[in-house]
Amino acid sequence: MSVFPRNFKKEFLHVSYGEGIYLYDAEGNRYIDGASGAVSANIGYGNKEVAKAIYEQICKTSFAHGSIWDSEINEIAAQKILNISPKDFSHVWFVNAGSEATEAAIKMAHQYHLEKNNGISEKSLVIGRENGYHGSTLGTLGIGGNVNRRKLFMPMILDHPKIETHYCYRCPFNKEYPSCGIECAKKLEEKINRIGSKYISAVIAEPIIGSTAGAVVAPDGYWQEIRRICDKYDVLLIADEVMTGVGRTGKNFCVEHWDAKPDIIASAKGLAACYFPVGATLVTKKVADVFAKGSGVFAHSHTFNGMPAASAAVSAVMDFYVKNDLCGNAHKMGAIIETKYAKAVADCDFVGDFRGKGLMWGFEFVKDKKTKEPFASKDDVATKFRDYCISKGFTVYPGTGMVDGINGDNIIIAPPLIITDEQMNELFSKLLEVLSSFADIKLAKLKR
Ligand SMILES: Cc1ncc(COP(=O)(O)O)c(C=O)c1O
Image 1 (tube, helix red, strand yellow):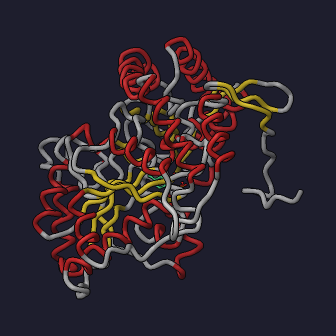
Image 2 (cartoon, rainbow, N blue to C red; image 1 turned 135 degrees about the vertical axis):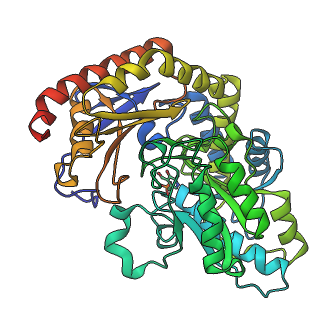
């Protein structure tokens, strides 16, 4: 073995090829990709239109270094992204991944304040959230709260302040929506005042919390409240839409569900939908103008930023996405999940809560539905469940730690946005079957 594997002690499936929502292993077994990889392969596999567009661009040129060259295809790709972005967005900073998109966003926020104030600003801290995940670089680990990803590297991390996430099923303040007055959002103001607004450059949040919490949806009013607070203290608002963006939740960008108005959006997974590693930091005119009128230069770049080959992938994926109204399909399928399957999933033994929007849904396992007690982390329930699903011919996306950083198991269901009614039926029939038999076979002995 020459590849440094993700786990030396695990046996991996060997992928042979993919087609639509399915992946096939080397023995020809078919798996429904119920999680679009890592909620990322949004247009499914084996798309020839996209492959052709990338091939044709590579035949012209795959690369031309951004310090000297721009290219027509980059401009086309950026324009197509802006066409589906909220209206105040004016520019696209291309990167290669989600972590790079969020890292660029927080550096951009810091430099924004410097540019605006003639190089004099102490605004460098970013307020994140306890259950947030924004990437695995050292910079982005500092703004996220995923304990598993952070704990080994704590001495290397520059840790930023955090507030509790919204999490109505397990409200950190033991309150109920809406009588809570959205206390989880109000805490932002307290945090800013405790630290001093002159040190805070930005707030970062996922509109629907993904991998760390299992598709926890923000309550109505949450985003308006954090926007109000950010405006009051001259703090930029960054929406991390790496997972939720590009139609995943039934809107082009998830913040549109609440008409929220971030200053910066970090995007990645769905942009080139796994046909090329692409991310992007989208900025409003308000932010871009400060750079344009200031030094003119964002002091940050990577060799591969804005490769023409990557932009060809984005451009072709955007065409496919718009032409086939994949955002509309995600919305429609979300309604089907809600009306046809949600109750059946939520009623299963051990399922504590089933929540989501569009084609991003999650549930969590509990030992006891009444007390909501989670399984112990050592029981590894989410991973075992994922492995059991694989043995039945479909994949899901497991996550852990949302209860207290350590305990809590969740599963995200997020198939490609091209999924049809019949395929949904196939996926949910399998899921419900596994949920019932998994409970009998694997979880029964863990129950009190
Ligand atoms: C919300 C969010 N932000 C950032 C990232 C990091 O993206 P990447 O894995 O492409 O670096 C992820 C990855 O899952 C994510 O879900």
